Length: 150
Image (tube, rainbow, N blue to C red; front, side):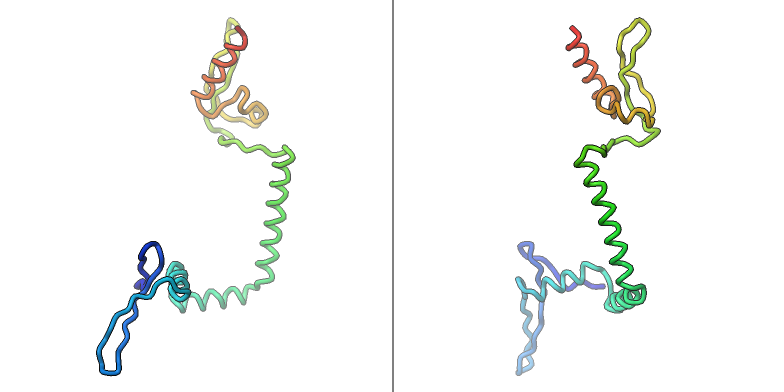
């Protein structure tokens, strides 16, 4: 689809060619109008009018009621996560199970060292305390720990 919209000063515009009564043609640039904005919104869909009509017909057939019910259910589930996070029952970790992480561990002789390991379910409670996403984070925590022990 050929775009009719272009931008001037970040505003959508379009050119309109008009014919005068004496047969002369003049091109005018229309900007800062509701029509330009609506045409820009339409062109941004990258769909032809037939495709939009087909999509609307499918939506009608599939039932907007069902779609709205699904959206309401999703909103309810999302709210449960938001509530859990606000109540401190949900935590987010940048690493998934099996990813490489770095742990503070006691070595032989009693020294605490940084060891590379894999993220496990049991690590979740220690994340940010003795389990870290990157080696520099773990090294920083180790240095802070050594500083408090001296």
